[in-house]
Image 1 (cartoon, helix red, strand yellow):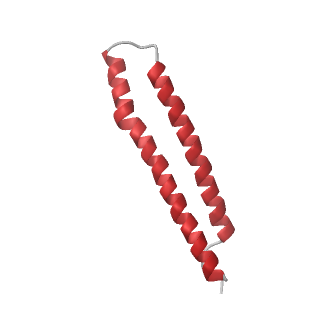
Image 2: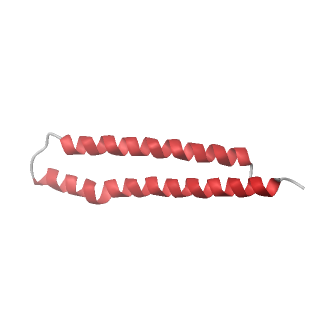
Image 3: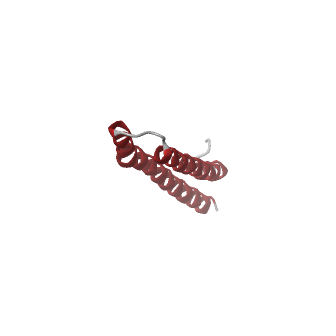
Length: 87
């Protein structure tokens, strides 16, 4: 019979990778927000673009960051459960 359960080290590596990716997305999101804020652009098109960034795109990226945090928590919990079951 083959292995049943999870490779704990692989799960822990996945959790670490999720953390790195979350930080990268957060840093990129913050940089993009600064670029959007500082664009040398005047007029109603700029106002609409900034409004879309602030109400659609930025919150969407924050949701992704939050979803990755949730996935990390769940994967970590599964690794903990697998570790307890293996001992």
